[in-house]
Image (tube, rainbow, N blue to C red; front, side):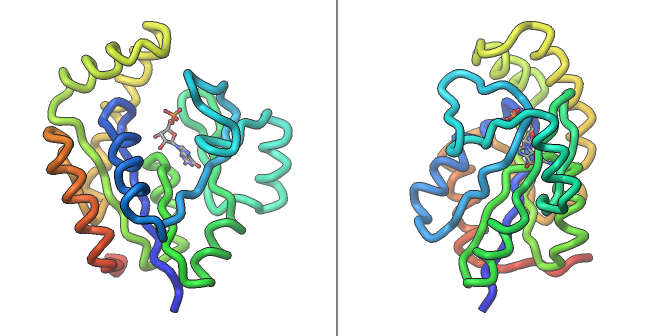
Length: 189
Ligand code: 5GP
């Protein structure tokens, strides 16, 4: 049997990374697809763990060779999902989870009919702003731009199969786990 494909999208600062870390710790059989990106590594990010950090030329060559299941430009940088990793794992019956933006989610949904998509929302815009500033990993300009992008992205929550409002972390973890545990791939509308 083919594995299930899960897509998680969220504006940055919505707590998605923490939620995914909990999920992956508790679901050992769930494989996280490490994306390729042209953006610079942040904080303690590691190549091959958080992302495969690459340059634009190498990224573009991969895109030209059709090596991405999807790719998109986000905030001036390119991000892409390795096609072989996802297909090989699904074919061998393993579940895969993607952390990708709304543009990527739309591309994947159009290619993988039974992918299950989950959108994580912050409880409010003010809280999102507070979390991004508290992270202190980026300049004020980048944070401002991320907030603008978040406003644009949030509109797309309706396209997703599930929405989690990440107010209380413990509740959100349980919700996310129950979606994955149910293993129900929601048919495409
Ligand atoms: P960040 O720079 O904060 O790590 O990620 C910025 C955005 O890019 C997030 O919305 C994240 O989900 C998205 N992203 C990460 N990897 C991929 C990918 O492979 N494809 C697409 N389309 N978006 C990605």
